[in-house]
Length: 128
Image (cartoon, rainbow, N blue to C red; front, top):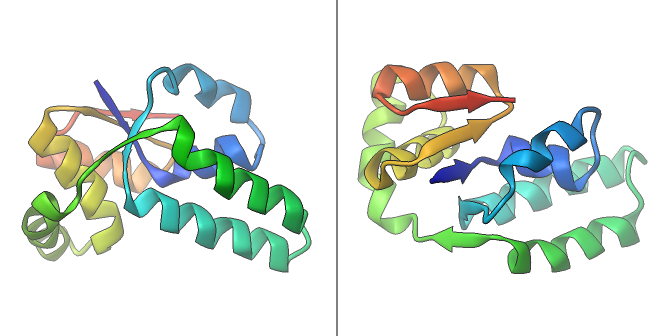
């Protein structure tokens, strides 16, 4: 099973360059609920910079929850905190890594730093 992080989700839904390449990882996609907030934040930045139409952003946000299965992240908070502290990482990135670790999932990310950290922690990471 694969856990999809926010960098992949943003790339795909906002059709950033190379978005077609990540589509292959989105068969029966799984993520954590935090990804909804991170997607909203990324889309808001794009709207504010006039890189994305407001209505398109709202459409993405309304469609997104129905296309993914979400695992609870509250079970992974303490492990994420431990990872973030030990490796001087953000708690946001560590949440995805902790969830992948505890569920024995591969992590799919477009963030090289997050992929490298995941590997240090023992999570197989696929960088797209």
